[in-house]
Length: 416
Ligand SMILES: NC(=O)c1ccc[n+]([C@@H]2O[C@H](COP(=O)([O-])OP(=O)(O)OC[C@H]3O[C@@H](n4cnc5c(N)ncnc54)[C@H](OP(=O)(O)O)[C@@H]3O)[C@@H](O)[C@H]2O)c1
Image (cartoon, rainbow, N blue to C red; front, side, top):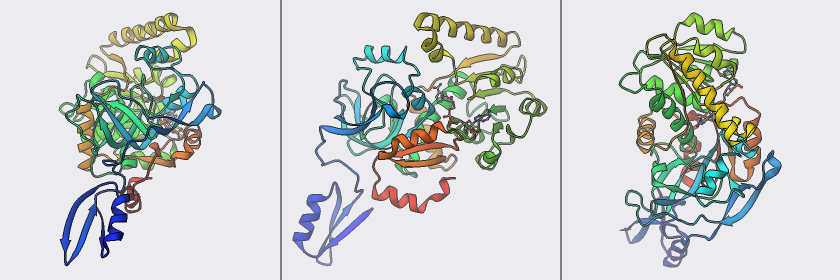
């Protein structure tokens, strides 16, 4: 909490005019004390009509980015909440969508929702403060600190404000700042969908289950390892040589260095798995399916489905057909050995997000941040993502509060 003591009324009045929110006023020894909770809270500040947003007006590389002055999103539904974005993360899907990934299906979803395809704001998750609530919103109020995901049919979070449904957010964990919080929602909800919703592993049945998490050093891998460790699973992961220390610190039991070891042979030596979480696809899918236990309800879950890639490549109907053939073939291949095969996608899930927030507040899970970029360097942040070698998440700071800055200084242990 920030506090200021004024001896002169004129100075206090001047500060008051500039202050965003005052929480407590008390008299002490003849002086008035004004306590300001956060220099970032927007409660009494009129909302601007326009905001800065990184947008694309076509598909391509970084050259398609524009930093536009655009309208602050206007509410169209009673359950919506307007959030002032403090931080947002970049996910591989943002880089892919900038290049046209999903260009066959996603514009159709946007059109159904009455949204135009371009200009498009990317960014799938965020942490920020509620600045406006729809008429039907009861569980959030202006000033609440929230985190969450944005849906593909709406504008994203690489902007100063983002409009979301209450189903897509919860209160942000209180022990981490916005920058750290923003690193979590998209990868966490994708992991949750993969492991729990599709894979059927939960905190009640995960104890002792052997799980292979491919690419433990990435956004999804670094979160999945921590969640599975809390639930008592035995975790095997693959990563590069220089990421071995990181994944070990997150809780992996066995680590296979794909740069220096024969991954297939090493994984085979470890034994069969109750679940494989595939974040790589391609060749990894072919050999990993053979590593599952047979006739023990073991699950293979991939977050790299061919659905959008195939529809982009072959057109809507042939692409859907091609993806369906791939799904059916793999499902039957698995069923022949009593194994389950699933595609998983990030799904809004406020119960899961709440549980994840509380695991962070209990310090069982920590956001893993690779690099933080200021808002004006979004293209540089994309360039960094494209370079690969992620060690956790890339985050964009849209605004930096005094409290966040203080946390950053105090809390370097969360970064790598
Ligand atoms: N279906 C969905 O809803 C959904 C949601 C989120 C993500 N995804 C997809 O899931 C994938 C992973 O996402 P992410 O956010 O975790 O990506 P990320 O943060 O970019 O991490 C990728 C990681 O993979 C490592 N890696 C690369 N090749 C590897 C290999 N052969 N063996 C082991 N590790 C390897 C990389 O490090 P090194 O190169 O240094 O090894 C990096 O740490 C992406 O394809 C993404 O599009 C899908």
